[in-house]
Image (tube, rainbow, N blue to C red):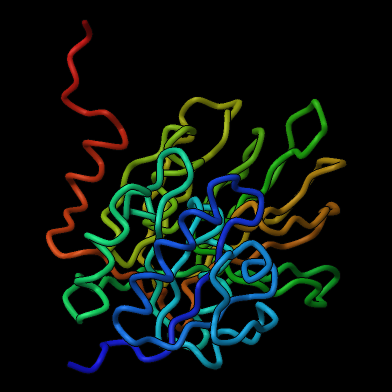
Length: 291
């Protein structure tokens, strides 16, 4: 039987002490299924089993049919931002803590990865965010985020003031520590800690969640995914825009942070039998009784 994926990119969390052991396990499964293996140069340096080819990280999406991320959710977020433009699906082996996105346990690599490589998996498309920062009418940042775009007070000890517009219509102005524009995937991240709702990842929606608002009547809002959100910084020295905790940009009063659904979704693969609600019960420890 020919493999479902002929060329597989493997990207690892470079500072994980257990990475070489897990890479060995992943490589053994890939070799068993006859896949050509690519790695970025940093992962290849950490691997005891050499790949077929080591490339710059940015070149992997051009060649790969599948990306296997060996690390935590942060590593997968970073990798997704590279792969999404080429439509490369991703699956994760969890070396982190919660692992909302990297759902293959570190101790079950062979058992759960083998069926995927034979073509048995759950495929899921997830909304990505496209964001732009404009200053004096000029675009100064254009990027993507899988989880969230956060406008916050940064290292400043005081609140910031900002105004929110949706499709050009003024919604509200607010003094707060910031605001989170979260994709459904991102609603189990920072937005959850800020009191936002959990959105099912198959929804085309964006959650707008204030961070410690001064006015308690300002509550999270869930918007359709085809709306454009503009967050205008009115006042706040040291404020910044943060994208998936991967990029950060210092803002000035008058800057506009635009957020909308990206043109292409991220594609995640899960082992057979994956259940989003089972994952939530496990990760969020629902239904556990206190001893």
